[in-house]
Length: 454
Picture 1 (spheres, rainbow, N blue to C red):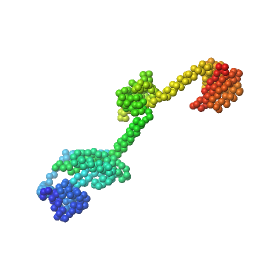
Picture 2: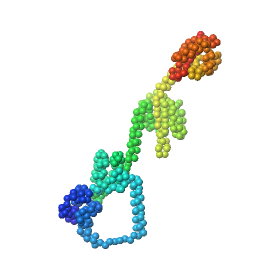
Picture 3: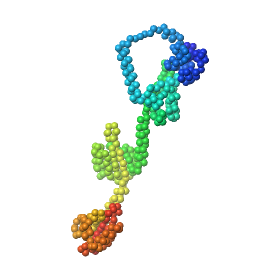
Picture 4: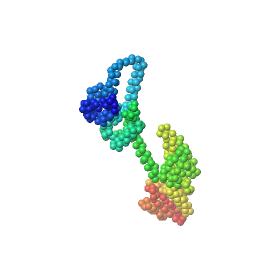
């Protein structure tokens, strides 16, 4: 510290006036460490310099730069430049640009700030209260609104930035006076003085709550979809427009017998049985053309072990949200092999029963009790009314077929699950009649009829 330095003159004044560092700090509204930095050669900004000089009752130029600088200024003649058209134009442009920048800053809710590292003073743009929710005049006004975890992170970032001279970008939270949490995105860079010392930090901050909220909603949505995708009881896959398996969940991998990696080298066309492929491709073309929003079909896949399974496939198209172009297929695949097996068994049983009925000369008929209509095959029609082809009997016609005693028997049979017995037509012909209530459709009866001696 030289005798012709700001720090030296300040220390002499404090000693001469018997002032403590705390007394100066209190008078100027700054921290005691800031005053201490000034006495050790730290930089002082213009505003604090003028206030300090006024408090000490000395000339601020002498205090900062010494007697020689004060004499030079006293002997200097002022130089006035005329306000030329060029200067007027440039001045107007500067004012217009500054006004435009301020308007853009306020509309974009961008806060500008400056932190003097020598004095610890902070300066914020006038829109800070609109963005943060409260005014900030000093650092002590800021930190109480920042959650502890974020405050610790920010101080670490600031320390690194000041030590390295590197700029930084951070996101942090603040709690506004209403108790709501806001996200703030901040960018700042350290500033060096002529001697290369980092003396301040300048930055911008903006309310980032909407983007953070949207990102969090998207993250939760993606997490829910991943959970559904991976844990669904049915197979789910992303399929490329060329048919390549892009991603398959574990259920689908187990269903087809392939790993996700193995499937990625295949296409759905290569696993679909050839007889089922043509209809599948027709539906896919309609989907890609925009004629339909999704399609559902049943088809067969050949598994890795060579076995064949029946599946129900529901496919929709995922489009690019920006341009609407098709991106990939989303397909849900359910194993319906067991259902197909049961249907095949039932169809075979029905076919065998039909052969037995035909061999035994038994006619088959269906009776809708609600409408009274009876639908009968050719054998039943021949036995009932002598007609040699399948047909239908109305309610009145049906009841006129029987003798009074047999009609009473049939009416009583409607209260039971089934009936089997001998009945007599009104013309005296005797028949054996079988009736059973349909297990699923109320009011529907299934029946058989044969000749008594058949």
